[in-house]
Length: 402
Image (cartoon, rainbow, N blue to C red; front, side, top):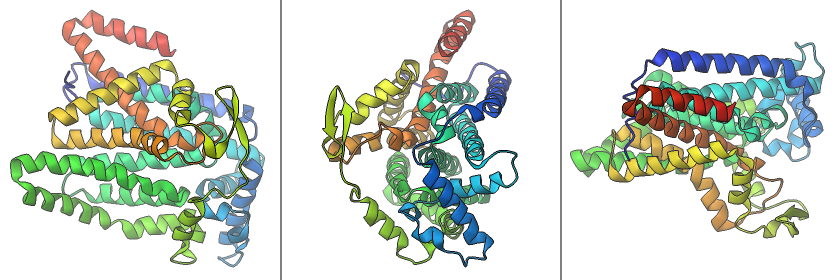
């Protein structure tokens, strides 16, 4: 099996127009329905955290109550701050403003997923990935009510997008790509410090690129080019730090504060309780290894899971068989790592798990992109066989996801 990722046999315009129409429809629907969503478990605490962060900036950095509130200062509060600011201009109450801000952030994530899949595998992949993510309740529903995990997922997929841009411009990414990388990195770490896991995803992808080039250029020239990319992206670190400081001001009150946050979250800080899983009440530090993968299979729509698995398998075939350009293989390795490594590490290490899979919501967008790539591959093969078969495939896809 071979993905012919860049040779789409249909004009780009229809798929792009369709994607625009989907985004417009989703924006309108979100605008009419965001008031229908209730409060999240953490809404009261996070809304107050946002108000305290607003007071910090409004007071000229004098009011530092936000840095003593509960344990939330260990998290970035960019979403809470943005919702607090929006509330001062919107004709809604604070919690309705938070629902609206959630819709804005969630739609932004859908746009990034569309652009990412399109960049890797063409317009069909972009439109399909957009639809697959939009029909996933774990993403679409949570974007209205989840003040921590959805913004983190959006920041993560934004960072992955900037990595893919840098692979396309390898080894000297353009200034815009470097700036976007800095913004994305700052937002990611400034939302949750655990965002540092992206180093594993990027390292995996860069290793694939390095090994691919080493076969033709030799290891030393290939390593030099890889180091050049890292050096160029490092130019964005001051910007990333500034963005992190805005959305997570506690982190820059002391140089060691981000490390303190990592240490804090390295140990479960609450008294353990039992949650129902597989028909039994289980202490959350003792959840079986099947918890995360099993719940993911149950939470994600079957069609999303099927195409995500197909896209992952096809990507691995391309990577290990050396098919496609080094940039494409590295981009696919990045997606596969972002989708699978968090789950694999969780299965191996068995951390404390609770509240379903919401803490791992950031895995869903990469899965949607991989699914979109699989859809594009299937469409291309159907189109090679017969154009009517391709249109029948589109109709069947629309019927299933509709």
